Length: 36
Image 1 (tube, rainbow, N blue to C red):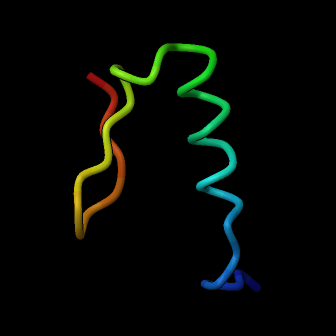
Image 2: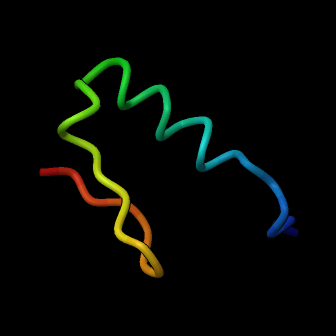
């Protein structure tokens, strides 16, 4: 079961931003994340 209050995705997106560069991973409000 997935807990919607969990921040697992946010943590991994933070890892990606550090590894790839913050400008490559953008937040799309209401949808999720986008890698440019």
